[in-house]
Image (cartoon, rainbow, N blue to C red; front, side, top):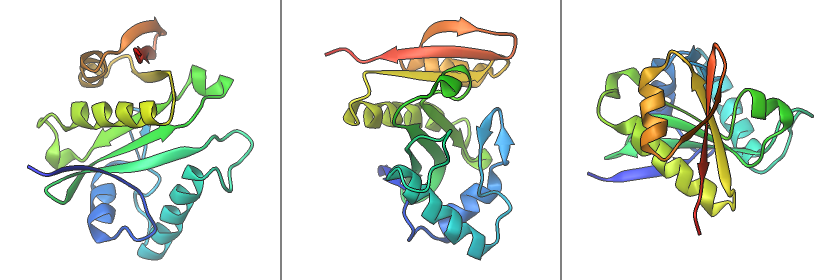
Length: 168
């Protein structure tokens, strides 16, 4: 099996587009802004993802953020986002990492794999500790985060917050 965590680029095409159309626009708190876009709008959206990774064209409340596709044997099966830093608002809702797996590929361990790889990217960026949140009723995501070293930090009625601290 060939596993690749590929950063979003303006050259991404139909395979990524198809995955993003299969994923809902907001599922379990993960935002997929490409769902329902036309081909032309998808190209604009991809350019924005690249700009975000470079810290360009950000609104005042936004921070640099990389987008990645988890590809298995060339097929995009998951979408992940990694923020380079957090604002006070993102500490309360959002965290460093968000991820989702396309519905047709769930139940194969790809959620845990994409989170593991995103944590590696966070470490490469020099982020010493990562905050990840998920909906309180999202049992699969809680299990994935805990399996990847997430330690419960706090919880509200709606959200659970985990911290992953890198050693050494």
